[in-house]
Length: 104
Image (cartoon, rainbow, N blue to C red; front, side, top):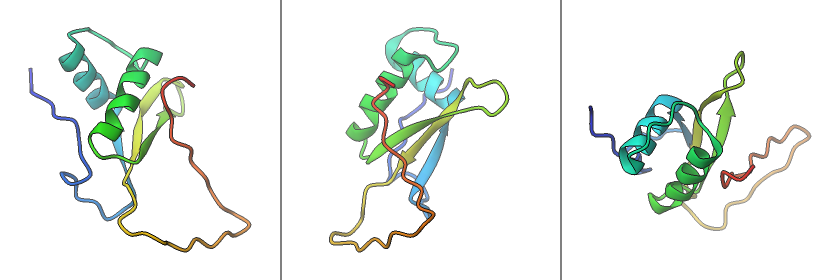
């Protein structure tokens, strides 16, 4: 079994403000760390992953369902802001993603 490491903002090639961690990687990390054998993204897996993300330097995360099955497809990890006093312009079409704690 491969040794998986939790991704960090500094270990990723980040041009965008967020990256996707796939369900397979999340489950591999969870099972490796906890010694369990989770097969799906359950509440306990979400809670564990969401609690670990800030410890590894992420600003937050948001879990996504797979379009057809509705099962967990993975989790978007948000890169923390790199500068302070950023101006944000609000338009009529603004998408706001809230970070999850795994309790949702």
